[in-house]
Amino acid sequence: MTLHSCKNRLATVWFVGSAVVFLFFLLQSALGKYPGQIQDAWQWFVPTWLPSLSLMLGVFVADATREPGKESQPDRFTYKLARALSIAYLVVLLLTLLLDPVARRLGVADSPLAYLRLSNLWLAPLQGLVGLVLGAFFIKRAQSGGKPLEHPRPGVHAHPHKRFLKRSRPTQKAEGDLNSLQRES
Image (tube, rainbow, N blue to C red; front, side):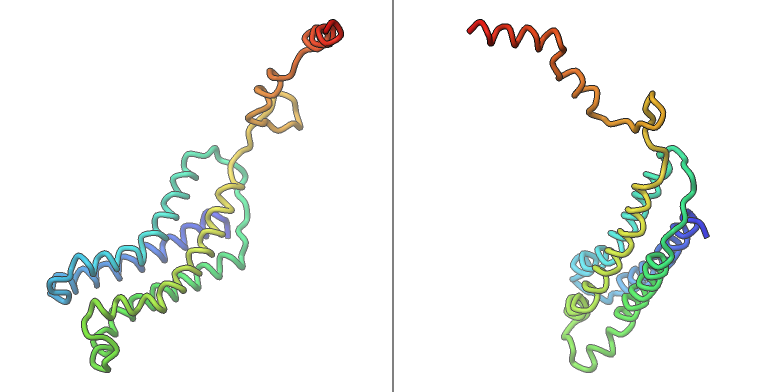
C-alpha cells in the first residue's frame, strides 16, 4: 500500500461519511427539526466535519503542486489509527443526530439545539483526537515528500539564506581595510 493510496482511502472515508451526515442534517433542517434555530444548528454542525476535510484538501493541493518524488511508504500504525478513529467519529456524529429524539424523551435535553450543544461533551474530545492523528499522517508525510531543492555542487543541499550570508560576509580586502583603520585610530 502506497502513501498516495492511504491518503485517498482516508479522504474517501471522510468525504463519503461527511456526505451522509450532511445529507441527513440537511434533511432534518428542511423538515423543520430546528424551528427558529436553523442558523444556530448549522453553526454547530459545520465545525464537526469541515476542519478535517479542509486539512485533507489542503494537503492534496500541496501534493499536486509539488514536484513528484519517490513514493514513500506510509506509517501503517498511524494510517490504521487515523482510519479507525475517523470511522468511529463519523459513526458517533451520525448516531448523535439519530438519537436526538431518544435523548429528549429521556429528558437529557429540552430541545434539539440544546442536545446538539450537549453532544460537544463527547464529540469535541473525539474530534480533537481524530484531528491530531489526521494531521500527523497527512502533514508529516506532506512535508517529507517531493524533491529537495538542488544545489549546484553534488551532495550539498540548497539553503535559502546562503546567498545572503555569503554576500554579508566581509571580503579579505574589506577585512584588511577594517584592520588598518582600527590600527590608525
